Image (tube, rainbow, N blue to C red; front, side, top):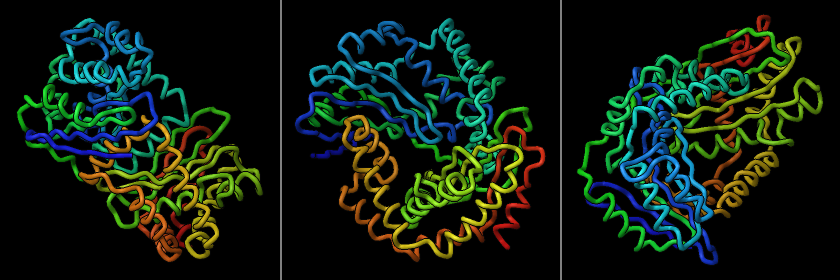
Length: 420
């Protein structure tokens, strides 16, 4: 494998990895702008813009965009996260120039046709409605909201319906002008690709863009609050969030290993105690996610109304136990899961292209895989236990509940159990 990087004079970054033996490639543009880069009145605009990219450009209508890629057997898609928006395609080696042309066209030349805006507005409103009808989706939006209240990082990526209903062409074009500067763009490719050809394309297609000063996101401030929505559902959905390390924090991998050991698989403490031993739930997990300047360890469980009290008590007990007595065997198992997940995920060109873009966004460089593995291997039991202790004794979690949760323990109850 060979990774090559280059930064154009205007700040646009290009990264690629040639993967010998592959006949296909994944190429895309990653923009370091997502939900947390919106002002309150813009909430949902990054996601709306992602949708509009496929609705036509100065050169292609929506059908022509889809046909250009699918006529050669390729695949094209996009997503919006809280810190990034991505537009990407997977094609055969001979069609890499075509994919690059289509992706750059939709990023640089969106038409923002009034009729298409109205059509896509309806699609997004349907998407919002679908999330609202999916308890184990919407409860995570609420958890994000109470963990980072009144902050961009706490707002829904889709945005509220009333905002989506009001967005127009000027709003979309304004966000592009603010947030799609060359310094915000990463062109990433992996698979059957030639870096010199990718770089030459970038220089021809993006080199004319004038440099812009990048606008920093509002710093995040984790705050433990609670939201509960009582509904007549079969299941009660409980989510908890604890502040955890940002991407570049020295404890990043300690947090990942702790979350895996606590609730990352069938052998984890929460799964074994809550489901296998006590039968209190069907679904339970813990995971650690990170952002540029903060992170969240999240715990989720779905259970019956009458079991909510026991379930939350067991979660508190297991967190306290893990902080005190997590074993070397548990840490080694979680470490192996983390490394296997990383290495298995690198077997596809698509995963590698996304990884390259994310690493450039986080570090400004591509760390060697051996460097990453070494950091995972260097995590000690004391570091993992120390992280667990900080979770238990820190400023307190955030909590969101949905369903028959009227009699559920409060956030104060849970915090008290952790402190006891």
